[in-house]
Image 1: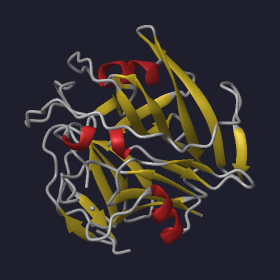
Image 2 (image 1 turned 180 degrees about the vertical axis):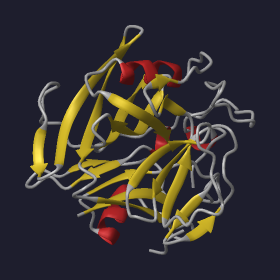
Image 3 (image 1 turned 90 degrees about the horizontal axis):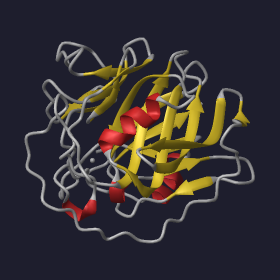
Length: 274
């Protein structure tokens, strides 16, 4: 596969729309999404809602139950020690793939879908991979996954820390909205009724990275931020990634790998390596 990218920000193909914004608002108007959901091919979680399953040193899995406004959902959650694992951006606009195809191509410890893309598989915001800059940065909203020049993972709010084109970043990917601003404040999003599959990347107060997918139509975006904040995950920051038909995850659990397949091919993913 080539490293190039698709995420639908306006509701094409049934992905999550952004009627739920305010300080994190997008300017595009979103048509009603077409709900064309297929059967999910995820392996049933084996971890309880209260116990972390050790997959490898510094890599854990848990089925995390979240609740908000009488809605309860379960997020398949991977927790990563960034001192032991490396997160990188993989972007292939010319040859997008399913989660399984990405796994076959890159052989990761874990993998999750990335940010939004259009019908031509072009990322709708900034993507940097191997120092190559593609796309245009969001301005005043959204967030950014960063691997800084020292090789350290960062989860930034573009409202708090706008993108600086003079930075020499090796890996970066933007998405929106920030559900929890760095520092632990829940973003205020306008109410909506769009319940969709959700994908989240988060950081807890000890600096561990969490990759999270709920493959059911459970939460609206305004509900999701408070649900994450009220959980026992002790989150310092959380960024919404592309959801709906794009939500997907893989975890290389010995003897019982986890696969949550996306319903559309993905040009943009986050890859976890040792």
